[in-house]
Amino acid sequence: MLKISCNGSDQVQLLAQCGFSGQPASVLVRRRSVSSIGFLSPMSRVLPLRAVVSDRDGAVVNQVGAEVTTLADRLRLGSLTEDGLSYKEKFIVRSYEVGINKTATVETIANLLQEVGCNHAQSVGYSTDGFATTPTMRKLGLIWVTARMHIEVYKYPAWSDVVEIETWCQGEGRVGIRRDFILKDYATNQVIGRATSKWLMMNQETRRLQKVSDDVREEVLVYCPREPRLAIPEEDSNCLKKIPKLEDPGQYSRLRLMPRRADLDMNQHVNNVTYIGWVLESMPQEIIDSHELHSITLDYRRECQRDDIVDSLTSIEGDEVLLEVNGTNGSSSVAREHGHAYQQFLHLLKLSTDEGLEINRGRTAWRKKASRL
Image (cartoon, rainbow, N blue to C red; front, side, top):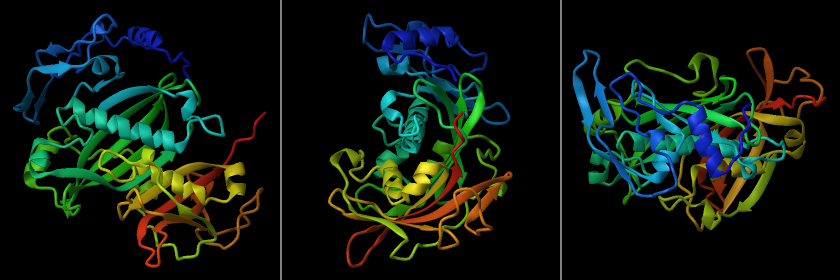
């Protein structure tokens, strides 16, 4: 993978080397022009036009006018694609984002997905407060919440690798919006991961879910692909497979986990990525030592607040014993995909109370670590 330094001046040089300056040939003008990058003045500047989006017949259905960009906008390595229907951004893997395997953790991957999704929303004119809300949503006090997240990682990037993530939205029935992602090694253009997620609307005050209205749907879909585009072909994946509830007690557990203040997001509840860490806390150590995470699917069922105490439960999906290190022994808990065998686990996060209210269901699939020469 491409290796570069992480200081500010090197990022500016990278922008120039990657040829990001200039405007695309289509009517969509890229939001960020690299020719203006510099550290002499942090003042904002105005672009005459950000985007013109047309329907299939070429009629203009949405036009966004003058825009003020910030220094952060000009330094960010991301922009809308030429058709305006997806967004790409490049990220450098930092040293503090690398885990015990000397590669980026799945929490790092999830954080990058969240970041690129928010930046995409801002690039098309949605709110800049981190909620990615449309004008109608802000008027009605509505926000987006995650209903399901599925992440597959085929190769984990290492420290200083450059990862390019593409993301786009599309409708998901009458009650939600789907956001997909493709992750690539920027140096080789190799696809190293894919993800898909489902988002629902919630009233920020009442915390009740609400159907996506026609007004909101029109505001969102104008920036979406005209035909369905799936990052993960559903017939070849478990991304839509139902996750059964894991009964208490699980085979493995970590009890009485407590949110830190740093785990709270701008909605004042526990951030989506924190749940991933809690799920993995109850994984058996022998799997952590010998395997790496291939995929994780999470169904979000209840908000977790600052003062909640959480139990993390894990069990093998299928058989009641772990696989032998050197073979599958015909275990039904092994899933096979494209000729590869994966050890699967079911997970449950619940409140550590007598009622044990369910917070999150999960499924993970693990592959054997590659042998080191």
